[in-house]
Every structure is written in C-alpha cells, then in structure tokens.
Length: 210
Image (cartoon, rainbow, N blue to C red; front, top):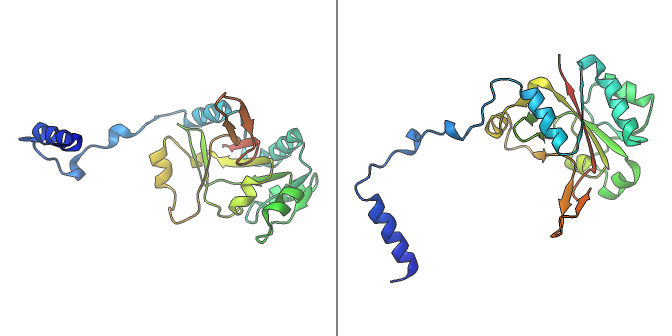
C-alpha cells in the first residue's frame, strides 16, 4: 500500500459517520476583516507603512496637493491620463510640462518622456493599504502606471473599503486590474531592498475627503 493510499484511508476513517454540510451552509463571514470605523485612518497608516507618501485634502484642495507631491518628487514631465478632472489638468499645466496620453506609446517612449503620472483609482483597501486600478477614466493604460518613476494617485474617501473581499465586490473581473501596495520594491536573499524594479519607485497618495 502506497503512502497516498494510507493517508486517504485515514481521511475516510475520520470522516466515516460524519454529516456532510452543503457548501452553501458553511459560514464564510469569519474570513472577513471588519472595521466598524476609522477605515480612512487605517488605509493611510498602512499605505505609509509601505514607504509611500500620504496626503489628505478636501476635494477642492486636490490640485494643490498634486502640485506639492510632484514638486517633492522632482518631476518635470507629467502625464495625466484622459478622463481625469479638468481642474487638475489646468493646474498641472501651469507648473509642469504635459505629456500627451498616447495609447500607442511604447515602454521606451514613456521611459524617455515621462517623469511622473497622476491617476485616479478604482478601489482602495484599508486592511492591506492597497490601491486597485481598473484602468478606466483617469487611470490610463497599465504601462502608464508602471513605467514612470513617480506615481501620484488620488483616492476618494468613499472608494476606501475595509478588506479584500469588500474591494473585490466593487471590481469588474473582466477589466484589467492592477493592485498597488506601496512603491515597487523587492529584496534579494540577503534582504537588500531594491526599489523601482517592477514599477514606480515613488508612490504619493492623495486621499480626498469631505
């Protein structure tokens, strides 16, 4: 008798005489992390833990916060994808060189012509400090958020949910989804941290509340 057969035999013996519970009767709520309040504060805290910069602002203050974040990052050439608010575009145009949101742009051209990208978001998850993009209006194609060295992302407070299941419930799985948990970083076997390998080295998050 093989080891596999021995193990399966023990499982059958253990299950003999037990009642089978239909899958739809198995409680799943225990898998959820529920936060009754303070999810915006928790999200900001978790994002900061990833070495990202977090700014909070009223909606009308967002354009100035974008300028402050881009100045702090030393950006000069900024891409604002189609569908972003015109008030942002007008304010950024007064301070920075605007990069055209060209759907045919290559990775090489984005790398050469773009210092930073400013986007909206689809969902933000407080428990993990994760931002999710579905590359709808104001978010651009995936390469736009992965190639530039700086990503400034605006998250509306009402887009913040408490945990991953709640976030997934708001997303369309048919869309291209990008999950961002802090600046891009990796470590080798000696735990030497290297940033910017798979995406932007600098992540600035502006939380618009009020």
